[in-house]
Image (cartoon, rainbow, N blue to C red; front, top):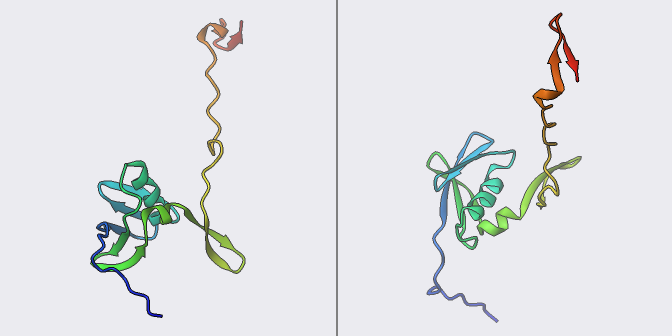
Length: 122
């Protein structure tokens, strides 16, 4: 059996992206810096409301260097360093913020300056 393809089927146009250096990518007015910038760019494009079914073509200068089948496929991946080398793996967002929020400042009424210029708690 031969498999045929419908060449008349409409395909969404590819999003053109630019890869800058090893950690920066930009497309459609968005710029990201990350260890895997094209994958992070895919997530940001979805957040911006771009059709996740569109492919993404990445260029370095004028040379096509990477094709992502669909923005949603790229958004679902991350790169992990393993002992045998880097691999693509399923991306999962942090369950909580990666950095703890700062401690709330102490109210001004709780600190007073004594006659010697030192802070005393009230």
